[in-house]
Length: 186
Image 1 (cartoon, helix red, strand yellow):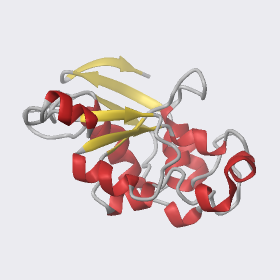
Image 2: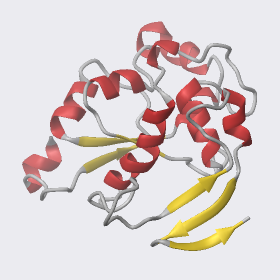
Image 3: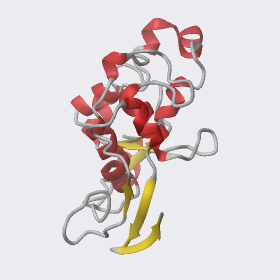
Image 4: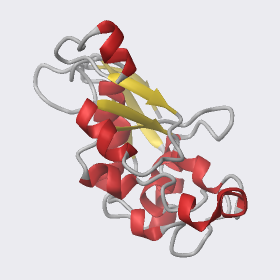
């Protein structure tokens, strides 16, 4: 709101982005969606300090932490990332955390932390690809596989939409393509 008041609306295809969004106040998610502000989030942060958010903020405030389901339901654009070196740079840990709300190292808590905020694997992948494209101001030129796009992609040995939760963490890149050209092959 302050940026818009000071600098005016952004050009088409441009978005303001807030990094490391973790703890919200009531009404924040709706405001972000209304203002078209992208939420850049690092899912593995949810489980870095087991019990810490509850201890430090209490049950009422914790309900507003990492509200992925609420954000997507409100039409908010989410961009996922690793936040390396704070957490492992491996993207599979980000997807695992986002889709299970569990720690990629310990695989806890069982059922996920705040499971009412679970999102699907497809939604997690979309946040990591198309959401990150939007946060990087790429205007849809990456983040999706479609004619006329950059064709930057990683090919995995695992179907992340159908494998078990634990198999997400075991997935390996077999090839990497950039600009439609293979730059890595296992």
